[in-house]
Structures are given as C-alpha cells and as structure tokens.
Image 1: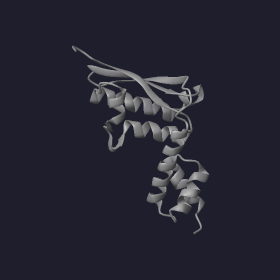
Image 2: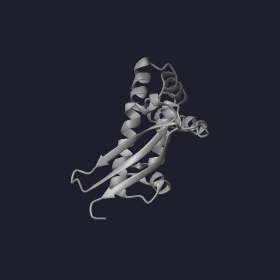
Image 3: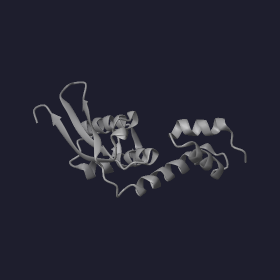
Image 4: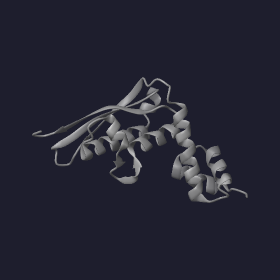
Amino acid sequence: MAISMDEIKKLRLETGARVMDCKKALEESNGDFKKAIKIVEEKGLARAEKTADRETKAGYIATYVHNNGMVGSMVELVCETDFVAQNDEFRKLGKEIAMHVTAMNPTDVTELLEQEFIRDASLTIAMMVKSLSGKIGEKMEVRRFLRYEVGV
C-alpha cells in the first residue's frame, strides 16, 4: 500500500514522531490511522525505556497556582540536556504535572506517577513522561515536588 506524504504529515502532527517512524507505522498498519498512532506510541515508549540508565543533569522547575490563589505546587522535571530543558513541550509537561499535583495532592513521586491525569483519565503521569521521553529521545523523570495550601 502506498502511503502519501499527507498521511505521514497528519500522523506526524498528531504524534510528534519522526517522519520515518510515521511512515513505518502507517505501512505496518496498512494505512489505518488509529493503529498507526498506537504503533508510534508503543515504539516511543520502547525508545524511552532504552534511555533509562542515562544521567539526568538538566531540568526545569514548573509551577502552578490555582486561580483562587490558595493552593499551588512546584515540580522538578529533569532531563539529560539543557537543550531539552528549554523545549516548549518539556516545559508544558512540567506545567501540566504541577497543575495535577495541585489538584490531586499525591503523597510522593511514586503515587504521582501512578495517578490518572486529571485532564485525560486514559493516561497516567508516568505514561505522559515516557511518551515525551520517547518522542524526544532523552531520559526524563519527575524528581520531586512540593504542594502548598494556605492554612494547612
């Protein structure tokens, strides 16, 4: 089956995966877009597992304060290089995790990673981190977080 550049571009925009990964996923799924997304995600997670032994020396402190000003959090999201630490997607992930911490009040990093994301229950925080790690090709992890609440 011939895969068009438009299909590859659509999958790339949807997943953020590399062009060749998109093409291979579409070929493997015989042009089924939903199956191709699943293939890209699975391969991205596999790529993330390959980086597990690497050292994380850079990162970003993400913050979120709820609109009532009464509760907020800080999350240390780490990666391998300063280049990735400056990446908009990396910083957005940090902000999303900080918002989640503010809303869900996990007791520790292990509990946080196991929780379903408040905006999409089909994802856990761990899956979100692994997905971006696989997409970018660098090890990423939530090292620690703090949550503050007025009066507590």
